[in-house]
Image (cartoon, rainbow, N blue to C red; front, top):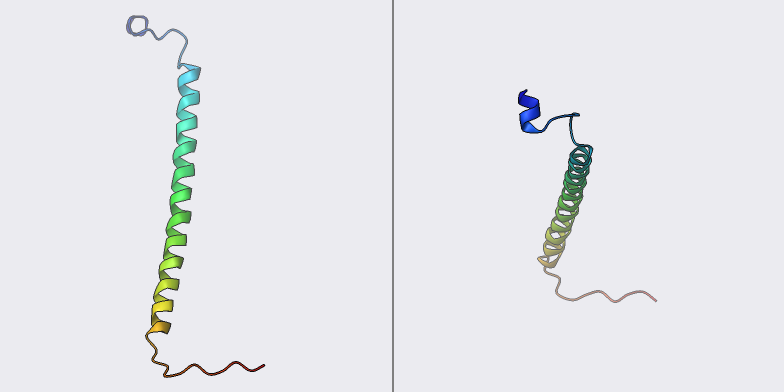
Length: 67
């Protein structure tokens, strides 16, 4: 009787289940995107610190290139 009062006649609504699956997939996609972007950010930060290390080296005059 409680099911009839709440409107549960045939089980879960397939539209609701489909929406739940779609949202779960979207969350997984966003989590993987976040991991990829964090890795890219870490690589860029490491490259930037490496470049600043090279700029801190004092070179009085650049050597000419050999031709």
